Amino acid sequence: MEHFIETIGRNMFAIFGVMALCGAAFMVASRSAVHSVLGFLFAMLCIAGCFLSLEAEFLGMAQILVYAGGIVVLFLFVVMLVEMSKKKENAVFQLQSRYAVGTVLIGAALFVGVFRRVIFGTASTEALVLRPELAKGLDVAHQNAQAVSRGLFADYLLPFEILSVILLVALVGAVVLAKTERV
Picture 1: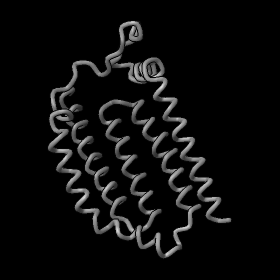
Picture 2: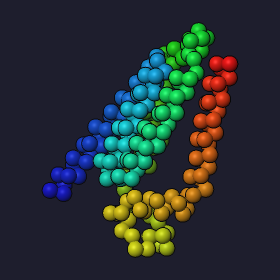
Picture 3: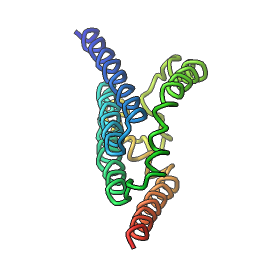
Picture 4: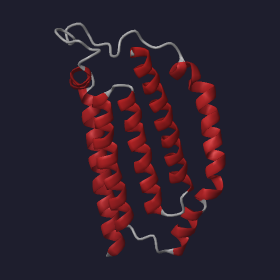
C-alpha cells in the first residue's frame, strides 16, 4: 500500500510539473500582459501542487499565499495601473513571442545539463536538517511546518526580512510609476 501511495505521489508530481511548464510557456508566449499574469498564476499553483504531492504542506501553502496570493495580485495591480496603450511599449511587448520558443529550449537544455545531478541525484535521508538545539523535541519528518518555521525564523530571519523590504519597495515603486504615468 505504501508503494502504491508513493507511486501516485510521483505521478502527481510529474503531472503538476508538466502543467507548471505549460503555464510558464503560456506566460512567456502570451501577447497580453494580463494573460501572462494568468499563466504565471497557473504555473505557481501547479508548483504548489508539486509541493503538496511531496507532502510538503507548509511550502505548498506558502507558495499559494505568497506567489499566487501576493505576487500575482501585485503584478495584476501594476498591469492594470500602467497603461499599455502607447504604441512603442506595446510593440516591444509583442516582440517577446518571437524569442519565447528559443528561450524555453535554451532554459530546458541548461536545466538538464547543469542541474541534473543536483536535482535528480540521491535524496537526503532527512526531510530537513536543523541544528540540534532547534530540533529538540521535534519530529522533522512529520512536523514539516514547525521545522521549516524554526529554521526560517532562527537561521534565516535576516534574509527573510530583507526580502520583505524588497517586496515593499517594489510595491511602492509600482504605485509611484503608475501614479506619475497618469498625471
